[in-house]
Amino acid sequence: MPRDPREIQLEIDAARESLAATLDHLAYRGSPTRLKAQGRDAVQRFLTSTAGKATIGALGLLVTLVVVQKVRHRGD
Image (cartoon, rainbow, N blue to C red):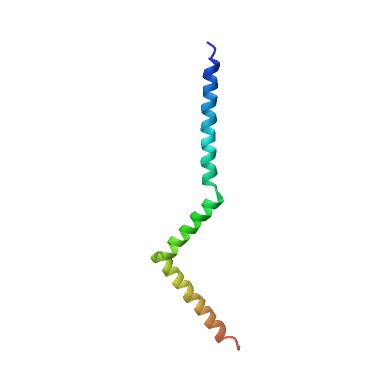
């Protein structure tokens, strides 16, 4: 039994709308501006956390030790 052309057109329109919604969602998820903001927020959350503060402290200590070693051995 042949399909009704109106039914086919309705299916095409529904598929088109679904595809458009999917593309809009992908464009939103892949937006460079949104990804940049999301990354910045994640870094800020990490740096204000206890682990982030400990990491920054350890890095500061390491840099200080390296500088002191360089200054101490500069005359060698």
